[in-house]
Image (tube, rainbow, N blue to C red; front, side, top):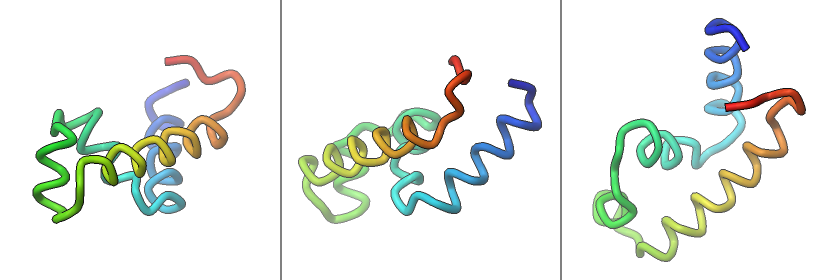
Length: 68
């Protein structure tokens, strides 16, 4: 996947997934689940649930030939 395609994919994920910001904060920016919970005023358990859901949705949306 070239950089332009990857950028396009990120934009689509941001537009379609309301919790994609949690995914980005965790995996791209390095925030812990505890830090996110404190910032959002929710429990760590809720952060884990939201991250699980967004990871599952991302997996369904990725092209079959996508490899990290």
